[in-house]
Length: 149
Image 1 (cartoon, rainbow, N blue to C red):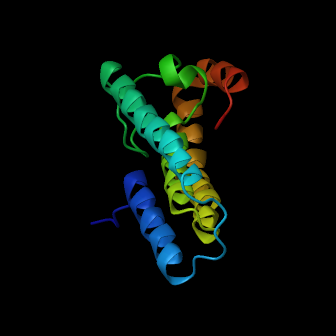
Image 2: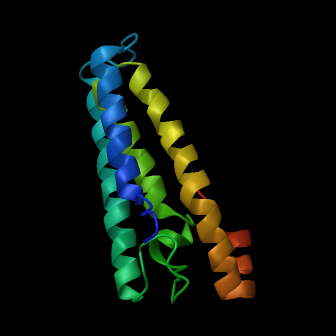
């Protein structure tokens, strides 16, 4: 029996826990005070909405949302028209929103770490798989649409 790979939502959950731990244990200087920290609701809601919209697109196209499983469709519409990985972008936006709400410096360090982890663990492999599965169609899409934003 092979080792199970943690799925992307687990990475988001761990990143939120790390950001909260930094906030409580080593917050650093306050960089955004009340009421400006409430602007964090914008990326938090936007990131959540982006995830819901992208998840719905996977269901509508009857393809898997799980990394490392072969896709049955290449989605290039909706959120995927502007970003090749809207769910991962949504995760980073959620985390940035949380960091803004916290308002101290150190939680902001977690968002680029999450983006890097998603890139290294998931995106590179997913993009190879998509190229192998969809060939020229993927290459045209990849040339037209940015990976993140």
